[in-house]
Amino acid sequence: MAKNDRFEKTYSQGTLSTIEIWVDRETGVNYLFHASGYAGGMTPLLDREGKPVITTVIN
View 1: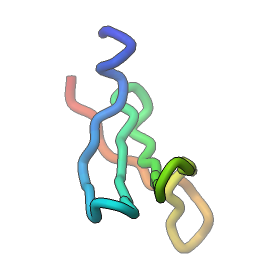
View 2: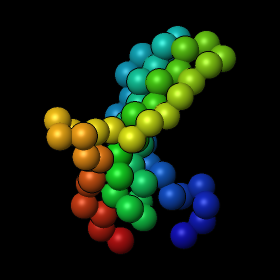
View 3: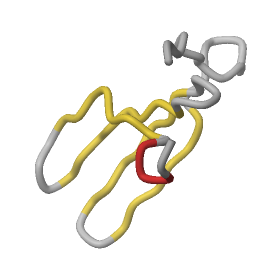
View 4: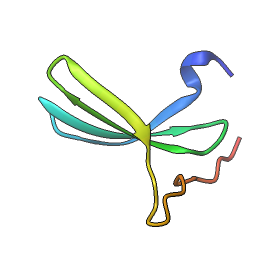
């Protein structure tokens, strides 16, 4: 798997201020990415119990 294929964008909303959800294809962990202008940040998406949201990965 190439380095640029590790993450897959599964959700996107907005244009100037964007919110995206990315899934790590190796671990299945979901990440929330928010960008506004030239600033942005990424963090693991957590459930109610504070555990990372994990998607089943099919190779």
